[in-house]
Image (cartoon, rainbow, N blue to C red; front, side, top):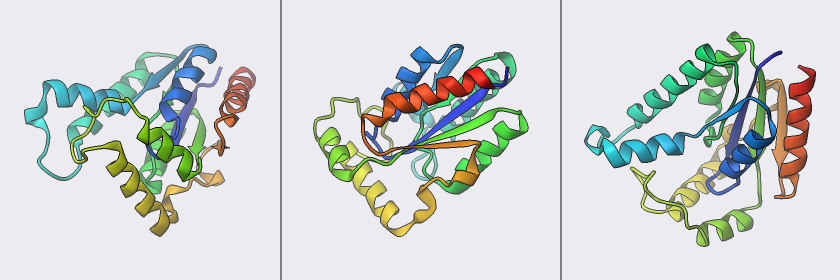
Length: 186
């Protein structure tokens, strides 16, 4: 049986984590790896290790360690529910999984901004994941500005073995069903 790596791509509050948890429940032998959990852990217990500016290398190192362990010490399908919005970084990550002979699936959450803005406005999510932002509104505004000026955030079909796009919340269940079907035929 081939292993799958499912990588979510999208703005804050677009449904990546909710999707990942739902997929994990329906996809046999699957594990969600959520970098927000790593950020919250580091921000809570190891705040003095955080860089004052620049990339949060400790968060990336922690995630990388968990991913490496999952690749080499388990037979699980992996669901990475980070934003993965930068094409260059996404391709580097996908290359690693292709070298390990995973079947790669990108799920791009491309919901309308008004849906995401409403979710952010009503959010009760913890902000303990933040290092360089003070609110989800700030994160969303930054992501919206990046998207206007940079097509680099939209995944292309040639990046992975499969690409699914979620444009409406009701698309989620059909994407999950298609991924489960892929796992059964691979």
